[in-house]
Amino acid sequence: MSRYLIVAARFNEMISKALVSGAEEAFQESGVRSVDTVWVPGCFEIPTVAAKAARGGSYTGIVCLGAVIRGETPHFDYVAGQAAAGIMKVGVDTGVPVIFGVLTTDTLEQAMNRAGGKAGNKGADAARAAIATAQSLAKLAKFDGSNR
Image (cartoon, rainbow, N blue to C red):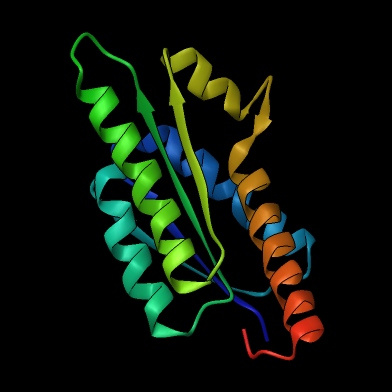
């Protein structure tokens, strides 16, 4: 049975909750029935939790959700860049699909548009990406005979 994890950031919680809802709906529509969700303080903390979960071996894929909205300080650049790099590193290092579903926008309006507004729900997109990537890895394992 496939089991997925959503790691969501509480910072910009209104946006994160909408992303999580979209991801949960996409998993359900895809027939995935086992989805756990954990909340972390902010996007900077997502990679640590995702890494622990990926190394644990219980999850088919991990979806990382949150929103970093540009402000008047360089804080955005540090948080968004490090969250992206950390999330990517977890996936590469563990072989578990770890999907970057963190919005990086200039405004709250842009984030809202991507969390169920005009631009769809990027949480749902991230869930579908996790499923598709897990399926690709399973197919690759059949080709090369490995147990990935």
